[in-house]
Image (tube, rainbow, N blue to C red):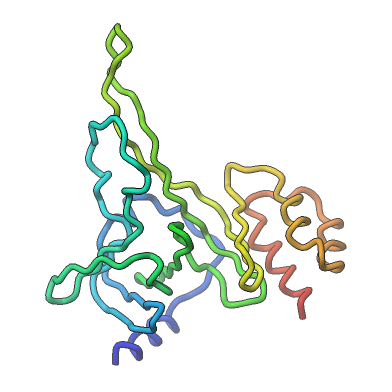
Length: 211
């Protein structure tokens, strides 16, 4: 029954290439959804992709990155809390948004399955900010968190390539990625500079060249 619900939920999911950037707080807010695990178990309940540990100001000098959890927090209808590693999750669906996970990064699925896939990528970033320094130079060290936004391009099951929003040289990266395919290289040579927002439409055209 749960697998049937999950399939119906996916059918109602509409693919679009235009999205607002999601924030850390979005991922730290519990929402009703589905979790499809790599063993094909389907869980239905409340899903919280990031914990909200960093919503509060932290006064600390150093927190090792290795101590930050790559787990979602899942609650059943009985409010039993389960923590699930990213590596155990195939997909999470919340409303019309669907997510996959790769080595600690979150990929928002904005595309139908094709030879070349494109995702919205969200990478966690943590850094220290020094606030209220006194004349002697000391201050309060506050751990801040943010997300780095990208488009993730993946050809089949090869290693994914991140095209970061604050990056440059997108066309050069495309040429490196598709250097083996002559008709894609011909296409890339006919277009001008590729802007960040152009990436999904470039992938659309490249997929048409695989037919």
